[in-house]
Amino acid sequence: MTAAAEPVLLSNARLVGLPNVGSVGGSGGVGPTGATFGGSDGAPSDGLVGGLVDVLVRDGVVVAVGAAGRVGDGGVERVDLDGRFVMPGLWDAHVHLTQWALVRRRLDLSGARSAAEAVALVRDRLADGPPEPGTALVGYGFRDGLWPDAPTADLLDVVAGEVPVVLVSGDLHCAWLSTAGLRFAGVGAHPTGLLREGEWLPLAAVVDRAPDHLADAWVADAAAAAAARGVVGVVDLEITDNLTAWRRRFAAGFDALRVRSGVWTPWLDDVLAEGLRSGDVLPGTGGLLEQGPFKVVTDGSLNTRTAYCHDPYPGLTGSEAHGILSVPPAELVPLMARAVAGGLRCAIHAIGDHANTLALDAFAATGARGSVEHAQLLDPADLARFAELGVVASVQPEHAMDDRDIADRHWAGRTGRAFAFGALDDAGAVLALGSDAPVAPLDPWFAVAAAVSRSRDGRAPWHPEQRIGLRTALEASTDGRGLVPTAGAPADLVIMDADPLPLGADAADVAAAAKSLRDMPVAATLLAGHWTHHTF
Image 1: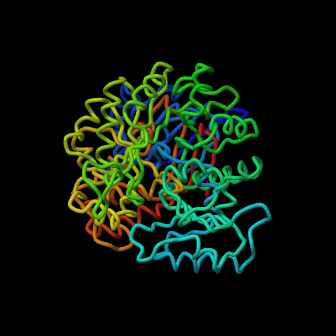
Image 2: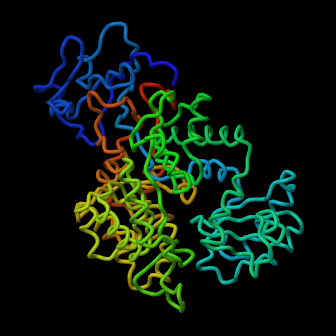
Image 3: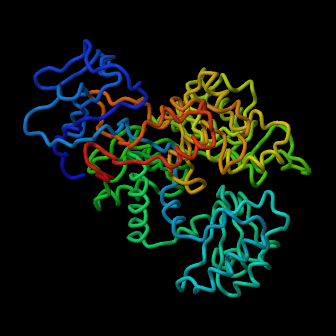
């Protein structure tokens, strides 16, 4: 953003979750300049319960929150919210934004129930015309863990011929390529065309080949779509020289989101050499770009049966029957120690229960602060360790809906402690909700709905004992800013046509409540006092 936003008074708003009873008044108040309201913590006083409020924004900051008609200076632009609900803007704590931007333009295979169905989707897309010369047909979202038939290059070759086809799984941990696709990716002969984990991940960037100007335009479009759902910030964990890409985008005028830019091992030295610490704001970005955490992937995924577990997967034998530990403690601990010494937080991918135990051990050994990303299957003994170590559980509730059937098969007898959001919350862990887009859509309302209902598509709730309350889910989506705008906080706000809190897990019709959350109407979004989305 090149200039501070003009002051604005958001009038006649309602605060999320406060009962619509009583009258405005009480001991809170504003001074002549409208500088503060309420108690010493900057929160609105109890006198606001049930009443309309005004929110004064100046220089990108919330200056005051007070009873309607008692806040603001003359001459300030007034925007009448007409009783709409306002709360701090939403964050997605785990995205791969470039990949999400590209996926929005790719062949969606998430509905394929077999390799044959996926091949038919490829055939139909190619019937509309081949991809641009020098590129591949890229699909995304398949989950073959429950398919009755095996995906092979031969199957794709029948419909694709010499057109390169690269299909990426929903969890990003494997890809299915045609013979021409294998050549496109620089792979020689392969027995199946299905590349998993270490075979695929080093090649994943092959599907991200796009000129910078196109990729940046697509990212801007994806960011605008996120803002339309109330998103003000993301933690971007793209597997690339992420900081360079984001500096380029902000220099070109990107201003739709706050971005915490994660760093992976190949670029760690560069970040440390600059002396950048997690939370440092990068100059020339309008205060919107900051250095994020150091990211390490320690195991695989559930769909590929490579998440590293204490117990073997049914039907598997041999060295990988328990999954794959891609970064063992002997490597992980020194890496995290280097990051900690440089002032970086750590974001450690761990999905299987054994991988989570080892990740928490590494936090304990290094004193690192940060998060375990995913935490999908947990040993009960590890639940309390999140709070004890100050480690955030950065979770993606929509994955539970995507993977419930696969978990029932591959984690049979253990799913009571899978995606254990309720148990983590009960143990005092701090939760942060995200999507892992493109694994799930970048829409925090989807994550919130899944977390509080454990249900989707009209199905019965899956392990409803692991639901969390809606207030907890929303608070896990606002980057620690709670549910009420407070004086002194950034003017990053979401304005909704309805109060989401009555739609919680205690609603009589859980399925209807979850759908209402997924469809939550977002009327407007403010970022540092600038409108990034607005319908009125």
